[in-house]
Amino acid sequence: MIRTEQLTPHTMMFHVQGQFDSQAARELSFSIFHSDHLGFKTFLCNLNRALLLDACATDQLALIGEGLRNKGKTWRVIGPPSSIGNQLILRTTFPYLFQAHWN
Image (cartoon, rainbow, N blue to C red; front, top):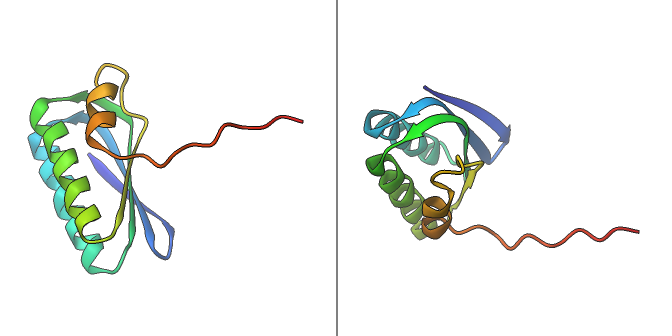
C-alpha cells in the first residue's frame, strides 16, 4: 500500500507499507508521475514500513530516481530495510550528511 503525504507546497512523501513488489512499485510510479505533473519538486519515499522488496521493486526505485533527477527534481529514499540497504544506497544518491557538532 502506498500512502502520500504533502509536507510542503513542493514536497511529497510516499509511505510504502507492506510488501513492496513490482505491482506496488508500479503504483508508486504512477503516484509520482501524477505528483510531478502537479508541480512537486521534491519526492521522498519512506520504506520504514516496507516488509519485503523484490529485485524488480528495487530496480523500479532506481529508475524513478534517475528519471526525476534527469528532470531536475529531488528524490530521496528514507529508511530502507537493512537487508537491502546497500542496494538502494548504491542506486540512489543521498546528500552529504554533515556530522553533528556538540557543544
